[in-house]
Image 1 (cartoon, rainbow, N blue to C red):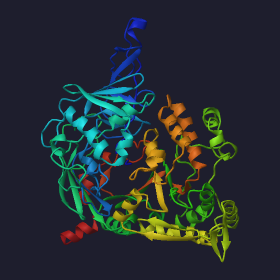
Image 2 (tube, rainbow, N blue to C red):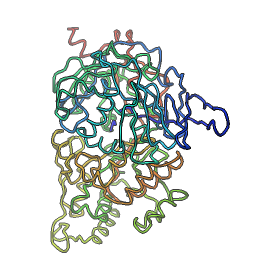
Image 3 (spheres, rainbow, N blue to C red):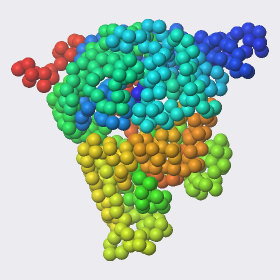
Image 4 (tube, one colour):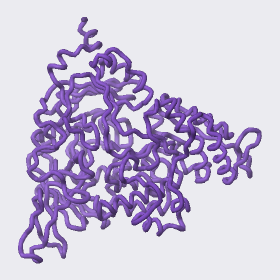
Length: 629
């Protein structure tokens, strides 16, 4: 879910005074030790999922920022669609682009570690060995933009309102919190209903703190265009629904010198202009009406930017490598509906998608085939299971497809000719096993004569050109598939209510998967409208594998358990994997500078800054036209 700025965790190492007679303080951590039964209580500025934080208690800034970056300048960005709300935490409405700039969380995640959270609104985090609870000590200088202090009451209110009236995601994400209580003037303690879940303290660290004094006088679950007071580096400026929204650096922001904020959020003003579709956005970039774009379409990257501003360097076109997991993008089938309830049918349809032809003819060879839900990472399964992964899967051998143990998973491949004869023959064989036959050039259910037909629901017309070759191959199988393109509000409504046959479904992943997997693949989420279990996975084995991932005691164990989950999902044939890329494709007018270091998570645009001299000298068509030059 952008996801937001995630965080990672680190536990400090402390030996008991009773055991050795003296306190031992681990590197780069300020820990305090007390006894709760036989457990050590840790106190620190940061917490990591596994191991120790990279940055110690006295760190000045992250390594991938420029602490001397100048503040100032304006950046103009684009968003597609519309907005009718400044509340991104509910299922209703469409939240304004960039609204996260006004909010902050208890902790912030670094972008050069797997999963470590550093105190932001808190000054200290406290937890026991088993992580069955976590306590935060809030800073004494944090305030809302309206000048009121941020309090423990705000923290408790935020958790409760998000769980009861927020987007369904929050009920899953914070569902393990059994109790939250104030334990001091600036102290708040969260207790958890489950043990062996190392991620829970970090999940609570991600909690966005909301102003109780503002929302308790308003209906939280309703859309609103009244900007709430925030706690972050920006506040809402001018806006016009459907056209634009601006954010201005908050002079009163308390955290400009905080080590996690140094060198970041350098722009004086950020403006998002709204456009109907990406084609218009590209024209806006080329004319200089927006400054920066991350291009997500291979054809556009290859063909749409052969313009003077790119050729002479006024617009920089760069592909920057990253090492972040690319997750899964796919043709997602709604397994709640016939005929997608049958895994044989789902597997058969995968043979009708010709990735090699698509990549060569539509994508200019830019993509790699996705063959894992955790692609581009060490978490991805490959080959045959072995070691701990195999031990885990053996527990479920009688409830998993035999291919899990006998075959490495590979997405169906072709020769790229556009006529995948062998693949379609394999698809026919699988469909016949599932009880489908061809009659009068149509694929029908042998018993009932019901035709095989379904709809691919899209929100972007640009994806139609990719869907149509897929449909051509489905037609060769006798399947009637149609593309339906709807506007974004209708698309969001239908996806949230699971009212579709097939969509382009994607799930981003982090280097440290955990509790969010329940929302992606859990049986409870499959029955909860608004969850991200779009495809309706509902399998007790998957549920148990998710819990094993969540309770992984070490990084190596997390890797093996995630691979087991990955393999079970792949052989369930819930999706037809599409593609991924290991670079960020970026275009920007040459008025920016960026840090020398790019972290493994990729480009961090909030660490860039405007170079005044370059901005003044840059000849931008739209600005020249506006000034009459």
